[in-house]
Length: 352
Image (cartoon, rainbow, N blue to C red; front, side, top):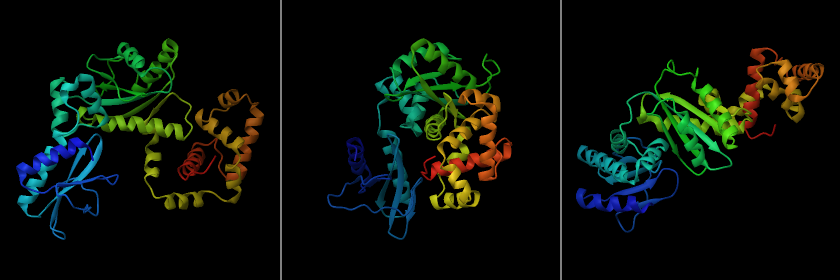
Protein backbone atom coordinates (compact mmCIF):
# COMPACT_ATOMS: atom_id res chain seq x y z
CA UNK A 1 0.00 0.00 0.00
CA UNK A 2 1.36 3.43 -0.94
CA UNK A 3 2.78 5.29 2.07
CA UNK A 4 0.87 8.46 1.10
CA UNK A 5 -2.43 6.59 1.27
CA UNK A 6 -1.49 5.10 4.64
CA UNK A 7 -0.54 8.53 5.99
CA UNK A 8 -3.87 10.00 4.88
CA UNK A 9 -5.88 7.07 6.30
CA UNK A 10 -4.26 7.46 9.71
CA UNK A 11 -4.86 11.20 9.69
CA UNK A 12 -8.53 10.84 8.67
CA UNK A 13 -9.09 8.20 11.37
CA UNK A 14 -8.11 10.70 14.05
CA UNK A 15 -10.72 13.16 12.77
CA UNK A 16 -13.51 10.75 11.83
CA UNK A 17 -13.14 8.41 14.81
CA UNK A 18 -13.67 5.43 12.53
CA UNK A 19 -11.45 2.43 11.79
CA UNK A 20 -10.71 2.46 8.04
CA UNK A 21 -9.70 -0.40 5.77
CA UNK A 22 -8.56 -0.01 2.15
CA UNK A 23 -7.73 -2.59 -0.51
CA UNK A 24 -6.67 -2.39 -4.15
CA UNK A 25 -9.15 -3.43 -6.84
CA UNK A 26 -6.42 -5.11 -8.91
CA UNK A 27 -3.98 -6.74 -6.48
CA UNK A 28 -3.62 -7.93 -2.88
CA UNK A 29 -2.67 -4.55 -1.35
CA UNK A 30 -4.54 -4.04 1.92
CA UNK A 31 -4.20 -1.67 4.84
CA UNK A 32 -6.22 -1.31 8.03
CA UNK A 33 -6.01 1.13 10.92
CA UNK A 34 -6.46 -1.96 13.12
CA UNK A 35 -3.22 -3.83 13.76
CA UNK A 36 -4.67 -7.27 13.03
CA UNK A 37 -7.29 -7.36 10.33
CA UNK A 38 -8.08 -9.16 7.09
CA UNK A 39 -9.74 -7.60 4.02
CA UNK A 40 -13.50 -7.92 3.64
CA UNK A 41 -13.88 -7.51 -0.09
CA UNK A 42 -17.20 -6.45 -1.58
CA UNK A 43 -18.73 -8.92 -4.04
CA UNK A 44 -18.53 -6.46 -6.95
CA UNK A 45 -16.44 -3.42 -7.77
CA UNK A 46 -17.55 -0.27 -5.99
CA UNK A 47 -17.90 3.02 -7.89
CA UNK A 48 -20.01 4.86 -5.30
CA UNK A 49 -20.70 4.58 -1.59
CA UNK A 50 -22.53 1.32 -0.82
CA UNK A 51 -24.00 0.36 2.57
CA UNK A 52 -24.14 -3.41 3.05
CA UNK A 53 -26.64 -4.53 5.67
CA UNK A 54 -25.50 -8.13 5.20
CA UNK A 55 -22.16 -7.53 6.93
CA UNK A 56 -22.91 -4.13 8.53
CA UNK A 57 -20.21 -2.25 6.60
CA UNK A 58 -20.20 0.74 4.26
CA UNK A 59 -17.92 0.65 1.22
CA UNK A 60 -16.49 3.60 -0.74
CA UNK A 61 -14.19 4.02 -3.72
CA UNK A 62 -11.36 6.38 -4.65
CA UNK A 63 -8.67 6.70 -7.29
CA UNK A 64 -4.92 7.21 -6.77
CA UNK A 65 -2.17 7.20 -9.44
CA UNK A 66 -4.63 5.90 -12.05
CA UNK A 67 -5.47 2.90 -9.81
CA UNK A 68 -8.84 2.27 -8.21
CA UNK A 69 -9.12 1.40 -4.48
CA UNK A 70 -12.04 0.32 -2.31
CA UNK A 71 -12.33 1.16 1.37
CA UNK A 72 -14.85 0.45 4.07
CA UNK A 73 -15.86 1.31 7.62
CA UNK A 74 -18.01 -0.48 10.17
CA UNK A 75 -21.72 0.38 10.23
CA UNK A 76 -24.31 0.86 7.51
CA UNK A 77 -26.50 3.74 8.72
CA UNK A 78 -27.12 6.94 6.76
CA UNK A 79 -24.57 8.65 8.98
CA UNK A 80 -21.98 5.96 8.19
CA UNK A 81 -22.69 6.40 4.48
CA UNK A 82 -22.09 10.15 4.77
CA UNK A 83 -18.80 9.56 6.63
CA UNK A 84 -17.66 6.94 4.09
CA UNK A 85 -18.40 9.29 1.18
CA UNK A 86 -16.39 12.04 2.89
CA UNK A 87 -13.45 9.67 3.53
CA UNK A 88 -13.39 8.60 -0.12
CA UNK A 89 -13.42 12.24 -1.26
CA UNK A 90 -10.61 13.17 1.11
CA UNK A 91 -8.47 10.23 0.01
CA UNK A 92 -9.02 10.93 -3.69
CA UNK A 93 -8.30 14.64 -3.44
CA UNK A 94 -5.68 14.55 -0.71
CA UNK A 95 -3.33 12.02 -2.26
CA UNK A 96 -1.23 12.07 -5.42
CA UNK A 97 1.19 14.55 -6.85
CA UNK A 98 1.26 18.07 -5.46
CA UNK A 99 0.09 20.75 -7.90
CA UNK A 100 3.13 22.78 -6.85
CA UNK A 101 5.30 20.26 -8.72
CA UNK A 102 4.90 22.36 -11.87
CA UNK A 103 2.62 22.89 -14.82
CA UNK A 104 3.94 20.09 -17.04
CA UNK A 105 3.79 17.44 -14.28
CA UNK A 106 0.30 18.56 -13.26
CA UNK A 107 -1.00 18.48 -16.84
CA UNK A 108 0.60 15.06 -17.39
CA UNK A 109 -1.07 13.68 -14.25
CA UNK A 110 -4.44 15.06 -15.38
CA UNK A 111 -4.14 13.62 -18.90
CA UNK A 112 -3.10 10.11 -17.81
CA UNK A 113 -5.88 9.98 -15.21
CA UNK A 114 -4.06 10.43 -11.91
CA UNK A 115 -6.26 13.41 -11.00
CA UNK A 116 -10.02 13.51 -10.74
CA UNK A 117 -12.69 15.47 -8.91
CA UNK A 118 -11.49 18.50 -6.98
CA UNK A 119 -7.80 18.06 -7.84
CA UNK A 120 -8.54 17.96 -11.56
CA UNK A 121 -10.66 21.09 -11.27
CA UNK A 122 -7.77 22.82 -9.50
CA UNK A 123 -5.50 22.05 -12.47
CA UNK A 124 -8.11 23.40 -14.89
CA UNK A 125 -8.51 26.62 -12.90
CA UNK A 126 -4.82 27.14 -12.15
CA UNK A 127 -3.70 26.83 -15.77
CA UNK A 128 -6.80 28.39 -17.39
CA UNK A 129 -7.62 25.33 -19.46
CA UNK A 130 -10.51 26.21 -21.82
CA UNK A 131 -13.93 24.70 -21.26
CA UNK A 132 -14.12 23.31 -24.78
CA UNK A 133 -14.40 19.88 -26.41
CA UNK A 134 -10.98 18.28 -26.79
CA UNK A 135 -9.31 15.28 -28.40
CA UNK A 136 -6.22 13.51 -27.05
CA UNK A 137 -3.54 12.12 -29.33
CA UNK A 138 -0.83 9.72 -28.14
CA UNK A 139 2.55 9.55 -29.90
CA UNK A 140 4.66 6.44 -29.26
CA UNK A 141 8.38 6.94 -29.89
CA UNK A 142 10.15 3.59 -30.33
CA UNK A 143 13.60 5.16 -30.77
CA UNK A 144 14.92 8.62 -30.09
CA UNK A 145 14.09 11.15 -27.37
CA UNK A 146 10.43 11.71 -26.65
CA UNK A 147 11.34 15.21 -25.38
CA UNK A 148 12.61 16.09 -28.87
CA UNK A 149 9.25 15.08 -30.32
CA UNK A 150 7.37 17.30 -27.83
CA UNK A 151 9.59 20.28 -28.64
CA UNK A 152 9.05 19.68 -32.35
CA UNK A 153 5.28 19.45 -31.87
CA UNK A 154 5.15 22.95 -30.41
CA UNK A 155 5.53 24.25 -33.97
CA UNK A 156 2.51 22.19 -35.11
CA UNK A 157 -0.01 23.46 -32.58
CA UNK A 158 -3.19 24.65 -34.27
CA UNK A 159 -4.05 26.76 -31.21
CA UNK A 160 -1.89 28.28 -28.47
CA UNK A 161 -4.20 26.68 -25.88
CA UNK A 162 -3.42 23.14 -27.10
CA UNK A 163 -1.28 20.99 -24.77
CA UNK A 164 1.86 18.95 -25.53
CA UNK A 165 3.46 16.95 -22.67
CA UNK A 166 5.65 13.90 -22.08
CA UNK A 167 3.59 11.14 -20.43
CA UNK A 168 6.24 8.41 -20.04
CA UNK A 169 9.66 7.35 -21.36
CA UNK A 170 8.28 6.42 -24.79
CA UNK A 171 5.06 8.40 -25.14
CA UNK A 172 3.83 11.97 -25.30
CA UNK A 173 0.36 13.47 -25.54
CA UNK A 174 -1.07 16.22 -27.68
CA UNK A 175 -4.45 17.59 -26.59
CA UNK A 176 -6.28 19.62 -29.20
CA UNK A 177 -9.20 21.85 -28.20
CA UNK A 178 -12.30 22.66 -30.26
CA UNK A 179 -14.87 20.36 -31.86
CA UNK A 180 -14.81 21.98 -35.29
CA UNK A 181 -11.79 22.17 -37.55
CA UNK A 182 -13.35 24.59 -40.04
CA UNK A 183 -10.74 27.21 -39.18
CA UNK A 184 -7.90 24.76 -39.74
CA UNK A 185 -5.90 24.12 -42.90
CA UNK A 186 -6.23 20.39 -42.14
CA UNK A 187 -9.44 18.58 -43.07
CA UNK A 188 -9.31 16.39 -39.96
CA UNK A 189 -7.17 15.48 -36.98
CA UNK A 190 -6.16 12.34 -38.90
CA UNK A 191 -4.75 14.50 -41.72
CA UNK A 192 -2.90 16.59 -39.15
CA UNK A 193 -1.51 13.45 -37.44
CA UNK A 194 -0.32 11.98 -40.75
CA UNK A 195 1.51 15.20 -41.61
CA UNK A 196 2.99 15.31 -38.11
CA UNK A 197 4.25 11.71 -38.34
CA UNK A 198 5.89 12.31 -41.72
CA UNK A 199 7.40 15.63 -40.59
CA UNK A 200 8.90 14.07 -37.45
CA UNK A 201 10.41 11.29 -39.57
CA UNK A 202 11.83 13.76 -42.11
CA UNK A 203 13.13 16.38 -39.67
CA UNK A 204 14.17 14.30 -36.66
CA UNK A 205 14.67 10.87 -38.19
CA UNK A 206 12.28 9.46 -35.57
CA UNK A 207 9.44 7.07 -36.40
CA UNK A 208 6.32 7.57 -34.29
CA UNK A 209 3.06 5.66 -34.05
CA UNK A 210 0.13 7.99 -33.43
CA UNK A 211 -3.18 7.05 -31.83
CA UNK A 212 -6.21 9.34 -31.75
CA UNK A 213 -8.93 9.12 -29.09
CA UNK A 214 -12.51 10.29 -29.37
CA UNK A 215 -13.59 13.89 -28.83
CA UNK A 216 -14.82 14.48 -25.25
CA UNK A 217 -16.96 17.26 -23.79
CA UNK A 218 -14.08 19.02 -22.02
CA UNK A 219 -10.73 18.50 -20.27
CA UNK A 220 -12.41 16.75 -17.33
CA UNK A 221 -12.75 13.64 -19.54
CA UNK A 222 -9.45 14.10 -21.39
CA UNK A 223 -7.89 11.03 -19.73
CA UNK A 224 -10.65 8.90 -21.30
CA UNK A 225 -9.70 10.15 -24.76
CA UNK A 226 -5.97 9.69 -24.03
CA UNK A 227 -6.39 6.06 -22.94
CA UNK A 228 -8.46 5.43 -26.07
CA UNK A 229 -5.56 6.83 -28.11
CA UNK A 230 -3.17 4.44 -26.36
CA UNK A 231 -5.59 1.56 -26.95
CA UNK A 232 -5.74 2.32 -30.67
CA UNK A 233 -1.93 2.09 -30.89
CA UNK A 234 -1.95 -1.20 -28.98
CA UNK A 235 -4.69 -2.73 -31.12
CA UNK A 236 -3.08 -1.49 -34.32
CA UNK A 237 0.11 -3.31 -33.33
CA UNK A 238 -1.79 -6.49 -32.47
CA UNK A 239 -3.66 -6.49 -35.77
CA UNK A 240 -0.67 -5.66 -37.90
CA UNK A 241 -1.61 -2.15 -38.94
CA UNK A 242 0.91 -0.63 -41.31
CA UNK A 243 -0.16 2.99 -41.11
CA UNK A 244 1.52 5.46 -38.78
CA UNK A 245 -1.82 6.81 -37.57
CA UNK A 246 -4.72 4.90 -36.06
CA UNK A 247 -7.94 6.09 -34.44
CA UNK A 248 -9.97 4.58 -31.62
CA UNK A 249 -13.08 4.68 -33.81
CA UNK A 250 -11.42 2.22 -36.19
CA UNK A 251 -11.14 -0.33 -33.40
CA UNK A 252 -14.44 0.10 -31.56
CA UNK A 253 -15.66 -3.24 -32.96
CA UNK A 254 -12.41 -4.91 -31.91
CA UNK A 255 -12.70 -3.43 -28.41
CA UNK A 256 -16.28 -4.66 -28.11
CA UNK A 257 -15.20 -8.17 -29.12
CA UNK A 258 -12.15 -8.03 -26.85
CA UNK A 259 -14.43 -7.48 -23.85
CA UNK A 260 -16.46 -10.61 -24.63
CA UNK A 261 -15.77 -14.03 -23.06
CA UNK A 262 -13.38 -16.20 -25.09
CA UNK A 263 -15.89 -19.05 -25.36
CA UNK A 264 -18.39 -16.70 -27.03
CA UNK A 265 -15.78 -15.57 -29.56
CA UNK A 266 -15.05 -19.22 -30.34
CA UNK A 267 -18.76 -19.83 -30.95
CA UNK A 268 -18.82 -17.01 -33.52
CA UNK A 269 -15.69 -18.34 -35.20
CA UNK A 270 -17.10 -21.87 -35.44
CA UNK A 271 -20.19 -20.49 -37.19
CA UNK A 272 -18.16 -18.52 -39.75
CA UNK A 273 -15.41 -21.04 -40.49
CA UNK A 274 -15.59 -24.59 -41.80
CA UNK A 275 -12.72 -27.14 -42.00
CA UNK A 276 -11.51 -26.07 -45.45
CA UNK A 277 -11.47 -22.43 -44.37
CA UNK A 278 -9.39 -23.35 -41.30
CA UNK A 279 -6.63 -24.78 -43.50
CA UNK A 280 -6.61 -21.60 -45.59
CA UNK A 281 -6.30 -19.40 -42.49
CA UNK A 282 -3.24 -21.46 -41.54
CA UNK A 283 -1.57 -20.48 -44.85
CA UNK A 284 0.56 -17.45 -43.90
CA UNK A 285 1.22 -16.51 -47.52
CA UNK A 286 -2.48 -16.37 -48.38
CA UNK A 287 -3.27 -14.44 -45.20
CA UNK A 288 -0.53 -11.91 -45.95
CA UNK A 289 -2.04 -11.39 -49.41
CA UNK A 290 -5.54 -10.95 -47.98
CA UNK A 291 -4.35 -8.51 -45.31
CA UNK A 292 -2.60 -6.32 -47.88
CA UNK A 293 -5.68 -6.39 -50.12
CA UNK A 294 -7.87 -5.26 -47.22
CA UNK A 295 -5.30 -2.64 -46.21
CA UNK A 296 -5.40 -1.08 -49.68
CA UNK A 297 -9.21 -0.87 -49.54
CA UNK A 298 -9.70 -3.73 -52.03
CA UNK A 299 -7.53 -2.07 -54.68
CA UNK A 300 -6.12 -4.77 -56.97
CA UNK A 301 -3.53 -2.57 -58.69
CA UNK A 302 -2.15 -1.11 -55.46
CA UNK A 303 -2.01 -4.53 -53.78
CA UNK A 304 -0.12 -6.01 -56.75
CA UNK A 305 2.35 -3.14 -56.66
CA UNK A 306 2.90 -3.33 -52.87
CA UNK A 307 3.44 -7.11 -52.97
CA UNK A 308 5.56 -7.00 -56.17
CA UNK A 309 3.08 -9.49 -57.57
CA UNK A 310 1.63 -9.86 -61.06
CA UNK A 311 -2.04 -8.90 -61.23
CA UNK A 312 -2.99 -12.36 -62.52
CA UNK A 313 -1.21 -14.02 -59.58
CA UNK A 314 -3.15 -11.82 -57.17
CA UNK A 315 -6.46 -12.64 -58.88
CA UNK A 316 -5.60 -16.36 -58.68
CA UNK A 317 -5.00 -16.06 -54.93
CA UNK A 318 -8.23 -14.13 -54.36
CA UNK A 319 -10.11 -16.85 -56.27
CA UNK A 320 -8.40 -19.50 -54.11
CA UNK A 321 -9.46 -17.67 -50.94
CA UNK A 322 -13.05 -17.56 -52.21
CA UNK A 323 -13.09 -21.31 -53.00
CA UNK A 324 -11.72 -22.19 -49.54
CA UNK A 325 -13.80 -19.81 -47.43
CA UNK A 326 -16.84 -18.96 -49.52
CA UNK A 327 -15.99 -15.25 -49.24
CA UNK A 328 -15.15 -13.14 -52.28
CA UNK A 329 -13.17 -10.41 -50.54
CA UNK A 330 -13.35 -8.25 -53.66
CA UNK A 331 -16.89 -7.54 -52.45
CA UNK A 332 -17.24 -5.19 -49.50
CA UNK A 333 -19.64 -7.34 -47.43
CA UNK A 334 -17.52 -10.48 -47.83
CA UNK A 335 -14.38 -8.49 -47.05
CA UNK A 336 -15.96 -7.29 -43.79
CA UNK A 337 -16.85 -10.85 -42.76
CA UNK A 338 -13.39 -12.09 -43.70
CA UNK A 339 -11.84 -9.31 -41.60
CA UNK A 340 -14.06 -10.31 -38.67
CA UNK A 341 -12.78 -13.91 -38.87
CA UNK A 342 -9.18 -12.65 -38.79
CA UNK A 343 -9.97 -10.48 -35.75
CA UNK A 344 -11.53 -13.43 -33.94
CA UNK A 345 -8.46 -15.58 -34.62
CA UNK A 346 -6.14 -12.94 -33.17
CA UNK A 347 -8.30 -12.27 -30.12
CA UNK A 348 -8.30 -16.02 -29.44
CA UNK A 349 -4.52 -16.08 -29.71
CA UNK A 350 -4.43 -18.13 -32.91
CA UNK A 351 -1.41 -17.54 -35.11
CA UNK A 352 -2.14 -16.20 -38.58
